[in-house]
Every structure is written in structure tokens, then in C-alpha cells.
Image (tube, rainbow, N blue to C red; front, side, top):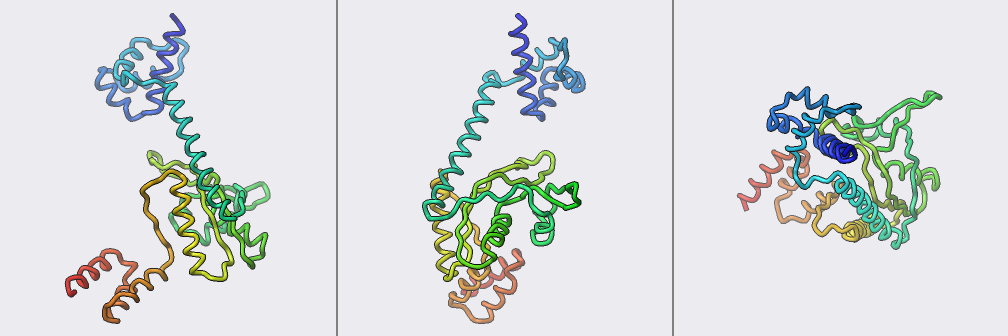
Length: 262
């Protein structure tokens, strides 16, 4: 009978390891002190079978730790498949695959990245005294690669798919390690044509990755200026909208006032 008991204990421990917040509710349902339950879940030579049996009664009847592991492995595999499909789109468009180093000089990110990234860097000092970090994204490392290889001149098309690392507070649903897949087009002679090509390519890649609905965010403020300039509104309103674009609440108020006047 021992293999059955061992499997049952492993099932219970596996569930509460994956769902730690469920333990409080389980203790209430089973009438077990929380400290007693926590102690029973530790790897003892002689586990408290009565406590574990009471906890097991609170588990979902269809919970299967092997199934959970298989599902997690399948999810990881499908993620790799999606990344591969997206990168294949870039490669077919003549973008050269690159793999920037995992370790990057920390000062590049500390000096030039936004506060959101800076406070989430994994930073350390190597034995030689250089401050390094795990790459928090692949965009800046790919730009550094372009500068190293091309000296910042000439046209280059790079694509990548690899791990990036950002610290997340305890309890966050976001992973500290994730895969970023993307492409960078450097030195294009026609900037507008390059932007259009990259946007179309991004849409094609995302669809190749299996997404049917998605949002696109553009970081080029010139696009907003061009949109405002194309509107049939008084020049004073154009200036006002551009000036207050960075104040979301007031900008929304201006748009509503403009719509009301129309």
C-alpha cells in the first residue's frame, strides 16, 4: 500500500505547491489549523496521514499532478512553436537571426531605459568590477549588436527570439522570465516605407503565431501629429491637442469639448 500512500501525498503536496492560496480555504473546510497543515505538507519521513487525508478531501476531484505537468510542458512547447512561427516570418522577409548576449552592461539600461525597466533589472557586479545585468529585453541588445557589427551605418535587418528577464513583485501574475520575439530594421533610406513594412510584418508574424485578435501600439509621436494635422479643425485646436497629448485626462476632456463644438 505504500506506493499508493506516497502517490496520494505527492498529489496533495503538488496541488498546494501550485495553489498556495488555496491552503487557507482548505484548512477552514477541513477544520485544521493552518500551522498544522503547513507542517504536514513538509517532506517528513512519517507524514501525518490524518491531516493529509483531510486536506486531500478538499482537492478538486479531477486534479491530476501528472496532467498538470503535461499541460505545462505542452504550453511551453506551444510557446516555442509560436515563437518559431513568428521568427520564420521575419527570416522569410530577409531578416538575419541574431542572439544578443544574455549578460549586458547595466549602465545602458540604467541610463537610457524608462523607470519601469530600471527598477526591475537583475543587476550584479562581476569579479572585475563591471556592473552587468540580465537582458530585460532584446531590443537594446540588438541595437548594440548593430553598432558593433555595422558601426551605426548602413542598412541591416535583424530578427530574434529569446529569453528576457525582469523582476516582478511577489504575487505578480507576470513571469520573471519570458520570451521576446521581434525584428529590427536599421538604416533604411525611406523611414516611412520602413515603418510601413515593419508594421505589416509585425501583423503577419503575430497572426502566424496564432493570434486572431490583438492590439497594436505605436510609439512614434509623429504619427499622432500627422493625424492631428489631417483633421479639419482650427489651428488653435491642433496646437492644443499636440501640447496636451501627454495629459490623458485633460486630453480626453479636450477631445470631448471639440466633439461637442462640432
